[in-house]
Length: 43
Image 1 (tube, one colour):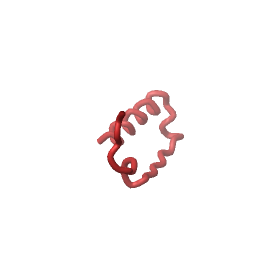
Image 2: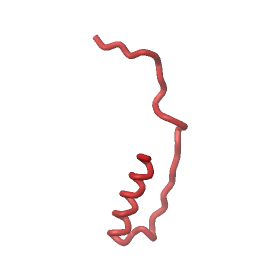
Image 3: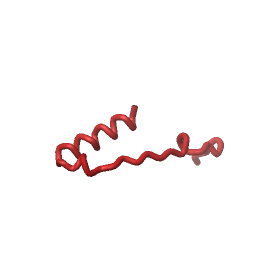
């Protein structure tokens, strides 16, 4: 949902500034969030 909202916001600005026709979106992924290296301990 977050990526959909973000792309929508970017698309709206591009269209508002009349540059959407000259723009390409490229999506990449790392297949998920950060790695879990175990329990974080706060002192």
